[in-house]
Image (cartoon, rainbow, N blue to C red; front, side):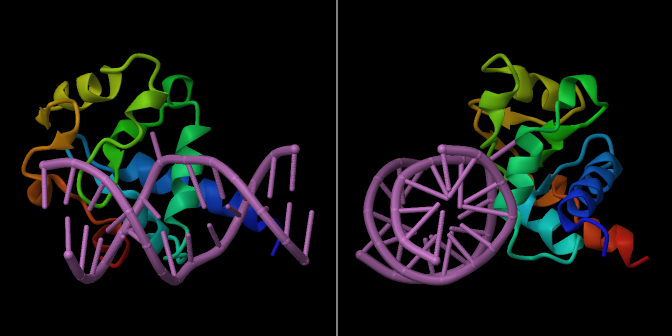
Length: 114
DNA sequence: GGCGTGACTATGG
DNA sequence: ACCATAGCCACGC
């Protein structure tokens, strides 16, 4: 092992960049996908420091397990995360929760275990 | 090493 | 739907 911390961050970035347009996933799902099912909070931490605006990182497609936009405060403006989601056809109810979350949800494990 | 914090999650009232 | 609680664990002080 070279550097766990860095490896995890890179793995998270890869998964996030793999989320298809118009879909979204959760912190816990990403944590599982990288083999660390208990590190959902760390995934959130990584997203908060990923500089999505300047890093080609669709961090707006990552929400919590209920489809709630728990990270919307980190996008500069209050409605930026919702705006980005709706720009790709995802409806957000009251700047809070993704509508039809069950169908919008994309499981990275399905992509990995093809 | 202790302690508070957090873009978390599951469960229960 | 909302709030509280408990488990979780890296991170920074």
